[in-house]
Length: 461
Image 1 (cartoon, rainbow, N blue to C red):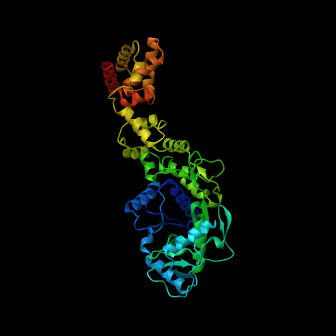
Image 2 (cartoon, rainbow, N blue to C red; image 1 turned 45 degrees about the vertical axis):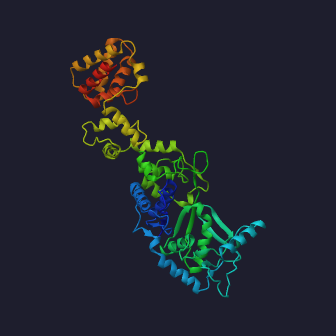
Image 3 (spheres, rainbow, N blue to C red; image 1 turned 180 degrees about the vertical axis):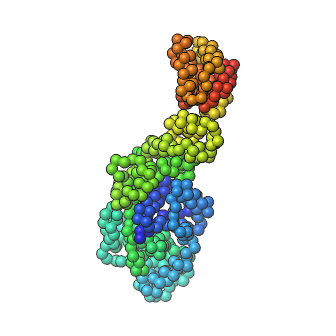
């Protein structure tokens, strides 16, 4: 059974790069009817934040990526890590290193002076003497000293690193707390992970983790190291570019379906297909098809996808979602008309909410530039005439087509261009030149509200 995981550190929000990695792992597990596990890597007790943990869980819930079982917290597993450290010490596969800070600084200075890479020289690897006083030792694992550490990366192919590049790294600090690469290897093994999909910033942690796997006789999982997401200029993605809290995307009015669709296409593809349902992603995804090279964040693509999902979502679901953005039209008798008139104009739920409020809330002021353009010549008199026609219309006015007939007759009877009535009417109803079609707006508002708004603009301007 395929078992994957996502393992964030709770020191800040979950950003979209992390969410993409989690998505790839989740899709691979779901495709294979396997397990997707969540591990919170909170061994750095000084930097951990309960708020950050809550934010990670909230983001998973929002996008609908459920994980199997309970979340695992590394901070509750120190006894397990100590057991394996003691095991390695007993078997002679790890040792206590008494090197002082002064010795380490001197060694590094000498190595740099010779143009060498700074690394531990193994001086306590086979130490049998009397430990120096006043030094609390760290625990180092015995790394192989010859040959190569080789593993096959599902994305990058075979990776071979000379064993001499991996020194006897620390697996437990002088205060007894275990180090990152040690606990990751232990947990991945004990959680039974078969496939580890993660960012390629972890690529050079992998040989160290393999050293731990082999020392403890654990089975080594399949590795897939995913290239980073760059900004639109091909440089490292920053918060300004979009590497922000996943939940901020919700605040900005993005739909989770659109965000996941956007992220799955950052580094993975299936022919020329751009739009994927969750079921299609699960069916088609394979980590072996992830691109080796970095992908570029494209805000226009995200907005296009979000707009697509808004336009194709049921009006009932949209109305429910809009309540979080200050628009409550769930019980409105014109719900479908309102959304059909506006959802083509909203690329985000925030924009859609603004479009709806533009119609439903009478303008408190009028855009000066729009007013100057619309209220030239006989604009006020034209508006007054239009209202007379509207109020005297003999057949019921309900649908946009009904109001369109009124506009057509008015233009014809008065031998004017449509702009002569359209511009001042739009400013009177909405306060500016923006917004949906006039026939749709009037059908939403009804005759009484249209008359009320036009009377006000005529009196005001």
